[in-house]
Structure formats: C-alpha cells, structure tokens
Length: 118
Image 1 (cartoon, rainbow, N blue to C red):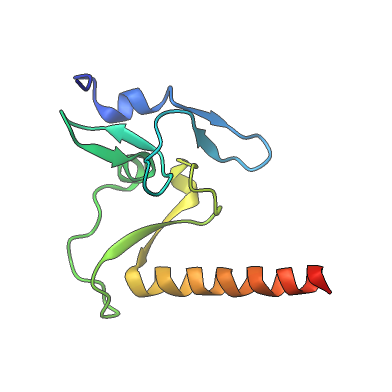
Image 2 (cartoon, rainbow, N blue to C red):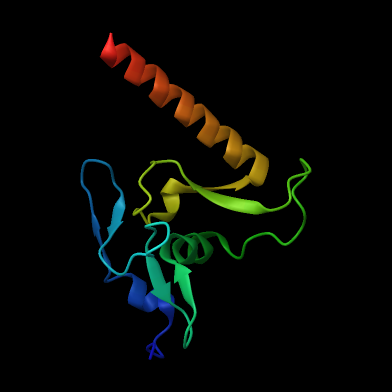
C-alpha cells in the first residue's frame, strides 16, 4: 500500500546529490524493465521519479501535439544518468528530437570505441 503523503514530499528523501555531477542520484526503487527510478503515486501506480521532479519544477507535460510532427513529448536526461532525478538535468523534447539525440550519442560512443581500439 502506498503512503497518502504526496509523491513529491516523499521524493526528497530518496536521492543523494553527487557533488561532482550535481546529479540527484535516486536511492529508492528502480523499475525492473528499464532501470529508471520509480515512486508510487497511487495505490498501484508507480511513476518515473524524474517525471515527478520535472513536473514539480515545470508543470504538467504539454498535451498539445509537438510542432515537428512527432507523436508525443518525452523527457531526456541531458546528464546521461538515468538514475538522476534532478529536474535541471531533464529536458522536454519531441519524440523526433529525443530519437535524434540518442542516435548522436550512439554514434559518438561508437567513434570513441573505435579510437580506443586503435
């Protein structure tokens, strides 16, 4: 059974701040599927903790369609630390923008691996 205390109030005791990166590293539960931090927001409804942080700082996710023809809005960790729940490290992107960032990150990692192997 989930606490009746609002998720954002329970949220603040469930992370530690990494002084080097300024990431708020989640110490609470982690989803078994993707490894993202989760927090209960209802009787049986977990939510990603970084979404709770972003929403508390910025308001609800947009409900209007993205202007670039994407099918939805998404949140992206600029710090590349999926356990980070610092709202300042999470940005709102369209699905197309998010996919393009991940494609660029994969290409950069592949190039780095090739350099290290040479």
